[in-house]
Every structure is written in structure tokens, then in C-alpha cells.
Length: 362
Image (cartoon, rainbow, N blue to C red):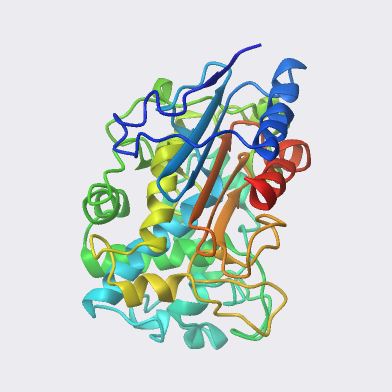
């Protein structure tokens, strides 16, 4: 058994309240679910971090520690969206602006009608990944090559008419932010999001950190976009130097569980360090109420895909790398579960069962 309940042990050093919650029966069962998958060898490392009000509970598994940095996968998307919203706050861009205003090459056909809001709410008509995604990664293409592909790729539907999960929209929103600020997105995030929130264990790409500082992915279970466990993909999969350094705005951030919680709590209690209160609330508002999926700006909203016991006001995101995080204004709760076991395995075994228990009874 290799589980350590850090509770208040390290929280003062993380800048979090020192009072730890008493463990509820639901939390005990949730922790046992994770422990079982660790004991049987399915799961190698994980951190569960739950905060309700000023009370914090944290459990670490395997060789992970409270400071361990995991590959967030698509939890990177809300981070990227926050960077764009900093520009909205400044009046430098508007969500209603057409993307072509900043990306003049994005002008063919219906593309010229796509707004920044649609890029951030998965309603632009762009695909999730490019058709030649694997080839680009295998050739160690820079992000600029993905941008070139994204501005040319055929749309799947008329902008704004449907919902379709799409990483390429997040990529183009990030490209707009970089062109407006003339600053690389990792640097902008560090200056205007991570540092103000005290997120010292968060970075897009690797930045000042080394790959050895990060929890390795269990790539034998990797999703198709990361090689699906094919040994031939090791030079470009989630553990490769290429991917860890790429700083993909849709999936390349690394963070600790406490840092992710701090980011989420900045929307529960906006204090102006990153965004004005009205702008923060705009990010967690449902922008697609009539479509099949409910999305905020960069966030999922509503309990579907987050936690069955959550309120309709919950917001958060999951990652294909085996991560899930949400915040529920109704209970002042943040939930962060970071693993390195891809979601195609950890989702049904760990992430959703644990989240359902915690959201219902933690």
C-alpha cells in the first residue's frame, strides 16, 4: 500500500488553509477506488485534491507528491481561454470579433464568419484534430505548422450551428492571443495568470522545468492522438521530448493538483488578480444552452461529464491524459484528480466513479 494522506501536512507551504476536512464515508470510498487500481498495478501515480470552503483534503498515490506536476491534457484549454479573456478584459479583443480580423489568412468561405467566442466554445465547425495530426507530430512539426493546417482545414458545419469538440479552435484562439500581445502564450500565461494566482508548479510546455520533473504518462494506454501505445510513436507521444516541450495550447500544460484547484477557485471567488469579476463569471456562463453540450469559455458547464452530484452551476474540464477537475459554486467545492493513466482507461475505472462519490457526499 503506497498511499499518503497529506491533508494539512503540506498545505501551509502551498499557501492553502491548514485546516483539513474530516474524511467522510464518501471520501473514504473514493480513495479506496483509487487505491484498488494502484494495488492491482493498473494505476502508477495520482493526486486527489478536494477543497470545500477553507477545508482541504489531499491524497497522493504511488511516487507522486503534493508538488507533482502532471500532463493536464485538455484541462489546458481553460488556461488558454483565460489568457484570451485577459485580452477581453483589457478591451484588446472582443468575443464577438471575427477571427479573420486577427488571422487574415482565415478568410475562405464560412471561415470569415467564425468568432473568437465560437473558437472557445467548440462551435466554430473546426475539427478536433487535423487529418494529418499524426504525421505532423511524427515529423516534430512546430505549432506554426498546426496553425497553417487549421486555417485551411475544411469546416464540419456552418459556424455556430452545432457543437463539436475541437482542439483546433483553441489553437487558433491562442494564435490570436499571441499575435495581439506579440508574446509567446507560455510567457503570457506565466505573467498574467499563473504568477498572480501563485501557481508556481504550472507551465505550458516545460519552460524552466525538465521532463524529469513531470510525472511520466502510462503511454501503453495512450489515446489515438498520442500514438495509441504504438512503440513507433515514442518519439512523439505524450512522454516524448517533442510533446512535452511543444506547449500545445489545447493539451500541453503541466500542473500540480493544488495549482489547478487555485485556478478554479479564482472563478469561485474572483478578486481581480487575473480577471474582473464580470469577466470571470462570463467564462463559467453557459454559452451554448440550446446545443447538445453546455460550454462556457474554455470550460464544460453543468454536471454531465464532471460529477453526478454537482449542481447545474458546476464548471470544469477533463483531459485524455487521465485528469478531471471541477468547481461547484453551490458548495464552494473544487475537485482535482490528476493521474497519468489515460482517460480511455482511467475514466470509467477511477475519474468518474471518484468524482461522482465526492460530488454527492464529500
